[in-house]
Image (tube, rainbow, N blue to C red; front, top):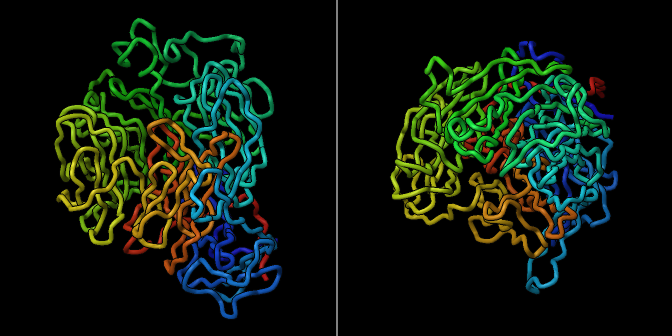
Length: 610
């Protein structure tokens, strides 16, 4: 039985044409985590984006309350008398004095054991081993993951790709329970099939969207049969060089709970004739023409939009769709090669990844597509003309200038270097130059000595948010992560995490590895459990399990879950797209979270108060 706060809106919005009073976000439970540490049990739980700052909590061990006074100053607690076999639950005390009860108890994550060969004094850190279902075979390797509430119970499940020829999608919960498997088939390339996991029709359960093709079987074991897939020959093997050389390709929405096909439509734009690929897409092998990106944008009048695109270095073309629970319907189309010529300046401006955010405060998201941006209505928002890059950061990187968000990226071609711009207007605030390709970069607030983000790029000095050189030497191959208790972020480098005081986690002690070769990506980095710090999921070296680490470090910072910040949530949704990029909140974290105008959408409408 769950009793919910009166200020958590429990509304099911059944069609994307619904006009939302507030920005809809997914309902989440308290996400309690209990972890064995050296001096007892460390507990961490979730504050919702609709909670008031003065919300209070009680904690129970084995059914008995362990706090003598309500917990008011944070959402973590150290229980010095706790044992590894204990169970815990949390309840919220609402502003009117009523209790948000949950009968669910969580078990303790035992302190980790180091693998053979680790130093004898290796620190034992708590983590959770998530055993994976049996491999589909064909030398497929577990890779990128996304996260969403597939079952409508307020908890996150994982959807991940088995990468290789003939890739598969698996859905599992955070205990490793297998929900379903989708076989994408030999006519789908894993790196051209970004996973989108999001509640598209407002029913409180996330759908799963992916690129599909002839031979795809859904989570019920059936070949695709809707829309253009109804009459397709599912035994057909499409021509391939380095990647696919012929159509068709589809976009399919799957039921998040069962993996069953809900809707299928043709992918746009098509590859086109093979003899035109070099001219249109940039090579004649199918490599650049299969640079496919996906995103979910929120449109205040249409609801969530699914957007899929093709092209980076030459033509850039994309189409957005609404989903009403039954059909994918086109909402708009954007094409840099539109016959009118109005968008020619967008050619070749794509990155290997995308970012999403309400960059102009209009209540709808734009798609940041590298050095250019396309607005929520499909109109070109701007292009800087500064060219392609391999990484980016979208957030309130310079908190003291007018405007909502900034966008930082390196550039792979002339004029090379890196640039910081206003994410809403495209105005270049400052830029740097380099003699060659700047392949990696990041921007985040990691050092309290400098206000705003520190900006780092390969082969160039570190800079502050204004572009001034600063005397730091951060690793451009690292990625920021909220993990220790500071308002600033720590840095993840491969499977290691370093904070202000030094090494926090050495992943290889626990057999934790990364994916995607030199990119050294985690499977996922997101705030999926506990308080506002981020969890990181690594692939175990034998490819048979994921290892999930959550922070064990106390903090007095009381902050709602990052997943109820719209900018952060939308960029977790696209984290697996192309080259994985960390998500950033849409506010300056060191100054505290603003009050978001959101409502929480829950599948279960039963509300009981005591």
